[in-house]
Image 1 (cartoon, rainbow, N blue to C red):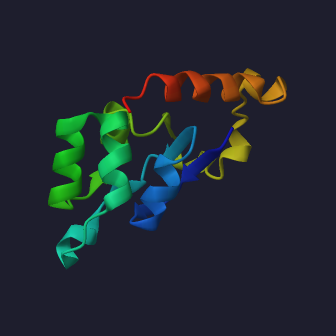
Image 2 (cartoon, rainbow, N blue to C red):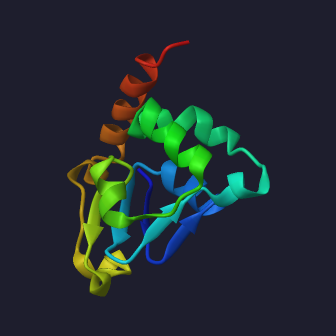
Length: 121
């Protein structure tokens, strides 16, 4: 199981790391975006991954406008798992624990296997 906490800005490569995690937490003041489009670049990996997380229309809008969005919006679209108070970042101070991690990662492995089997070819 992989997790990541955003405390500040996640852009470009930061978004690639974040979207690849099983659990993503963010501080209230965190913000996100895909500014590559402003340089005429497309974030190709996100064209495949982001629609699975936030839906086709949401992904299209985020990837092709490059607009910045805040943690609350990221949570409402399902991009992050939880918004944490700024005082809790780093997250280790907030005692977030997941029972599946205590099962030698068998739970997360099964979850991912099920998700992969439901993806279209």
